Image 1 (cartoon, rainbow, N blue to C red):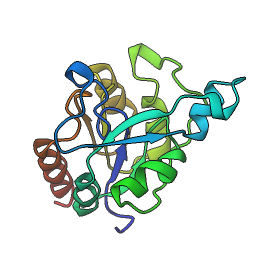
Image 2: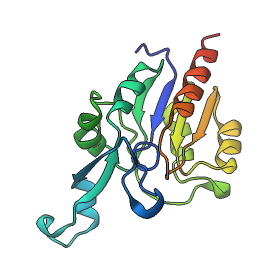
Image 3: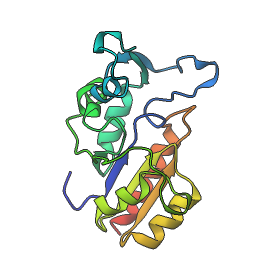
Length: 180
């Protein structure tokens, strides 16, 4: 994808891993994976790595093909950071993607915004972007509109359902409108 394409900033848990499904049952069409991301192990210190529980993740392999078919440059915008390239990308058939590296996790943003919002605006540096996340609110939309010098789509995805055909349609439509 050319560098003139808008960015698609991808969260893992929620959009790709519908972790909050009803009754905690694997959704139809998803495969269960068990990973031990390096950051997950670090967060459980001082436990030795072999004593840290595996993290259950549900992924829909067709999402990889659907994401790469969109007219975007894909970027990880997730707490998984580089672990997304180690674990999630191969499961979805994605190449290694650029990663937004968070200096600190879960520190509340200004004016009730998601903790990622201000970092995403700084990282994008005015470049058009769509951000898919299950934590987006109207506070984030107002913040990005006031602080980002380019077009942006903040697209909330249900953590119970993950990315669905209507989400892919909305993302495609927005990206094509950016081309004029």
